[in-house]
Length: 620
Image (tube, rainbow, N blue to C red; front, side, top):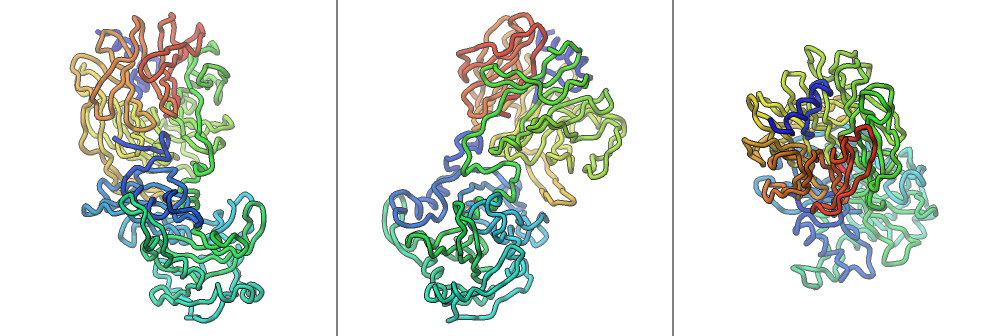
């Protein structure tokens, strides 16, 4: 038996059969080069209006560049996933439905006002949430602009989801209507008289029943410098019916704080975008696209912070340690240079081992997912540790009664173990391991434990899942058959439903096109961790006689050895910027955490204790 397999057996005993040796092709990704375009089609659309060669002297239509991309659920898209990329003013998407790869941008404003997140073409494909009542339609963010009207403020004066609301044809009148945060309307004759020419209503859209003022109509039909096929030319800056959609409200005056100064702003909601008119701005920037991309992102991904105005996030290295003298593992964190080795959570003699981070551009929303026996004292369950160190339980499959308000965990006949909770890069899902049905299998749920769905359905032992950077694939290790070796697998996620509603969240999915990437019958391969840009996998293998750290491409090619010691090197994880790899090694006589460059050079020791330090988690 190899040294790697011997160590696996010992750990299975120590971790009550729940933590084996193995912990669990995209271009740009949100945690790597997040400002890169993930599709040349996206870049082509952006360059038409916002290329630096043509944007001087006019407001932006999309923004200075992208800042987040992912694959979001949409029922009709291939495998239920469509590629999206966020900008300040909107979201670009490629649905891929019936082979269509044209760029569209969704009905984001309708979703924000209605509180219904659209998940497919059919009317019933909606995830019901609250309307965006903490996202102002204009001006600064809610923290400094909390008295300004939000999207929820417009619900009673907007047309959406066949609610039948219409405004009368008021062409040739100028806009005096104002609205406040509570949705109350008032009259501002002073603004009507001051800007009567600009706000004169000149177009009535009979389809939705709303009036468009002169100043917005001129903006929608602007011509000027554009970039087409890489060349600067002149033409219509955008096709406004495609970029904006139809108006869903009449224009209203609002009071909003902008840069700490309260201003009167004319706002009109369209299906996809918002237009604002600020008379006190310089002439070229009086009419602007509202920051609907930012607004929608705050509503959909409240846990991810504000990437458009935040510096690149960083994470400490979390690891398990026995340095407190007990037999159990406690969770610690440290900086990437080994400094500030601090207890994270609790050391109350309830073994706790880290597995993955909830990443965020808001440090207060960063969380660590851990395995712990602090429930019934025997079975491992999934918990989170918040930025303040507070621990919150996620799964209840150990026989402990489920408290009120906790999502249903599914039928569990006997107490079971849940562990290896890997958070999806967008922070919305978990892939984890559970032995509730016998041998350890992989499940997927929301991060609060709701709607737990088993996705491996065989007689193999499955361990240590890891998500691709774009959310399209799962990677994990598995042993299939008696005395079979562990290998690393990859499969496509096929989403059948993803309804993150407030009351009854529901997801359904399956794995497709599973591929054995290491395909070995003579060595164990495990602990796969996907690089932040999605292009590489680090993993552990004993193919050269003992456990070492290896690197391969995301498709399994170019498998390269990174460590070379006579001791055991294992459990690698990536720094969030993809420039370093941390790993565990017992090369100095007991287990400690080390770090190296991604080519294996520059290996250095970060912890140095007589007790074991293991199971490091860095950027995953």
